[in-house]
Length: 267
Image (cartoon, rainbow, N blue to C red):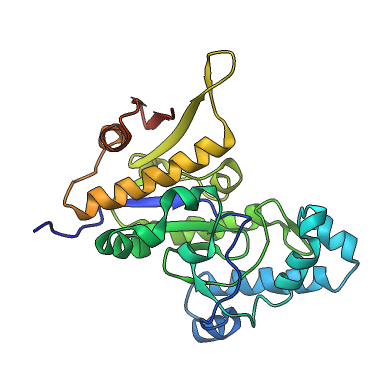
């Protein structure tokens, strides 16, 4: 019988698309009960700045939050309720293409338990959350600009420099974040030795290879799911070569390693 283990940490971006609703404990209640969490005070600062933004002109708030016109009404209303609305675990809240590829509801029981602990999702509102951490419905991208805060992603950098090492433990770290969220935290020289970044290449019309948004995001989710499944089946994943091997075995598609970067290919 395979022994459950969690030899990797997976860093994911959030998604603008989110599953609405939730019955979990509201964020405001949780923050009040977690004064010792180093993320609590920065989260309260973000929420306070968000409330000040929402108290001003609607068009200014929409621009600061980079909201497309069709999303303004829903997003502003949701942001106004971030402290009081119901929550759901992060891997159920986020519903974009990466999470379609991950397909968390259909992970095996062991892989689902691993995802709750091993997946770390970066967030403009919350900094970073584990896969099972309750998250409200919101829309605050990393590039949002809040009063007294500035660019949200920049605000989080020193906080995450302190927080991430304890969340990563000593395991291999597979970085699947998009550029906006990768800028929120970069490993120091010591940590960088065990961080593997993933780049996804897809065929372009001219016959070359490049990054194409949808297949790149979906492939990152698929890779995350495969790493979780292989880990809980007892496979040790300790190097970039191991990550590449999991992609090749799972999909039959090429993957190659260049230093600390794994380049995986889509069909």
